[in-house]
Every structure is written in structure tokens, then in C-alpha cells.
Amino acid sequence: MLKDDYITLTLGKEKNIALIAHDNEKQSLIEWCEQHKSILQNHFLCGTGTTARMITDKTGLPVKGYNSGPLGGDQQIGAKIVEGRIDLVIFFSDPLTAQPHDPDVKALLRIAQVYDIPIAHTRATADFIITSPLMNTTYEHQVINFNKNVTDRAKSL
Image (tube, rainbow, N blue to C red; front, side, top):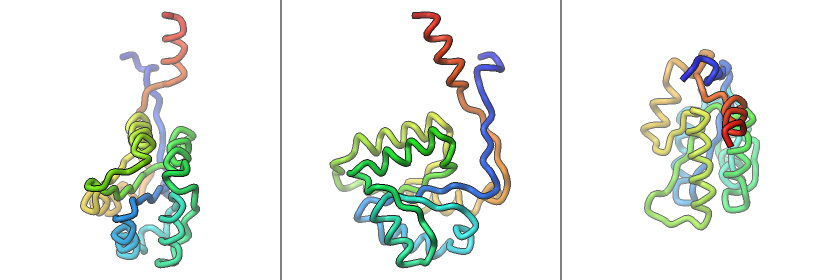
């Protein structure tokens, strides 16, 4: 692809981190947040409804809450990714329990992938990401130039 097919996005030194957990994983995420509290307190935290409230109540970390996942919270987080307002997603999902809002979860994961947003589904992955030296620096990454892509597609139709 040509050089203008991509644009560079920059994640700031202070990251915008979305915290999400399915019901059976909420306690594990809370424990993870407590374990990494000294790192997380240097970043802006947000999350889906109940998870955000529980993390704040149990750890004292300020977490901006959106709707719960089944009520559109995953979609809200996805929209923030599109707006460039989420840099990292920590999503402790439950692989053994069917979720009624699974299409919303898949949409969130897809949009995170489209925008090249780091996403952790497991505690081990979250540990690797949160302790990475990149957490304390700005980080540049390239994503598809969506405006050019849309313009080119419209011309070809």
C-alpha cells in the first residue's frame, strides 16, 4: 500500500484504559487492579457499569463507568476506541459461560483490532502489558487511513 494509506496514531504517556469483566471474572479483575494499583493510578480508567463500580468500591481507583455490557457498555467502549479515547482494553472474559451480549463483545474486539488497540483477555496477558516499558512512554502505531479508504471505495462503486 502507499504511504498515505496509513496514518500514525499516538498513545500518550498517560493511557486511557478500559476495564471490563464478565460476571465470573469480576473478582479476578478487581484483584488484578489491586495488584497493579500503583501503575493504574497514573492512567485514566473507564469501564462497563458494574465492573467499574466494583473496582472503584474495592480498590479506591477512580473508574468512569459506562452502561453494563448487556445494556450497551461494550458498544460505548467501542465508540470511544473509534474516537481515539481508549488506548488499551483489559477484558477478563469468561470462556466457559455463554453471554447473551456476545455479538456486542465481538464487535468491541473487532473494532479494537481495526484500530490496533492492545487488548488483554487473560490475567497473564494483562500482566505482560501493564508491566511493559511502553506503559510509561508515548507510543506511535499505524492504522489504515479510513478517510482515504472510504473515498477510494466510493470512487470505485
